[in-house]
Image 1 (cartoon, protein in one colour):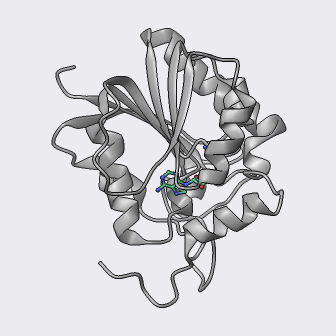
Image 2 (cartoon, helix red, strand yellow):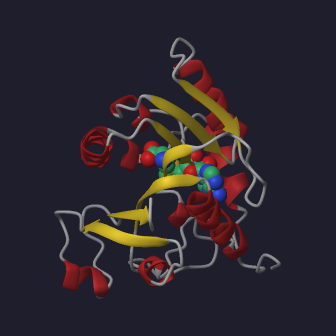
Length: 212
Ligand SMILES: C[S@@+](CC[C@H](N)C(=O)[O-])C[C@H]1O[C@@H](n2cnc3c(N)ncnc32)[C@H](O)[C@@H]1O
């Protein structure tokens, strides 16, 4: 699919953002980072997850909150990968590399894949579905998504976010089932379905591979 004329070049957006010294955003710091990591650490501990592949590691601040036995972080920008390489240079359990949507990954197998406030930033539809597919293809068992499950922000020309009907895409998967969703405490289920943004636009969703 060709990028629509009004689609922002989202990769360029993040490259420039990091190159100018800005961070992954308020969602990756402070209370938001604590909230996201509390849920993910709980799942990892509860399910005995040993290995995690993350799409969109960002600047690595959020990553400092997680407790993962083994971790590989991917990002569409080399700038983010470089920041993480520097930040975790002394941590042999973590590695990082650049990712291009659609590329075939041969990084081994992972108990869990995840994308935390990443899908909402993929403005190109083809890249969005390729990344979603890669999250599924590279997981042995669990897929964690933290993202708007319903569109809470209307897509505007040039925006660096594009919200979609994520829940709908995930309801009828052949190989995975939705086992858990959690709406952010600042919002309600009904509100979300009507586009309520709350203090954070993203909710939590856990998929499990059928038969795994
Ligand atoms: C808002 S930041 C979130 C970073 C991190 N997940 C967190 O929670 O702090 C979004 C990151 O996703 C990256 N990104 C966007 N599209 C991506 C894709 N298709 N695959 C991998 N990374 C992507 C961006 O470069 C950016 O670093």
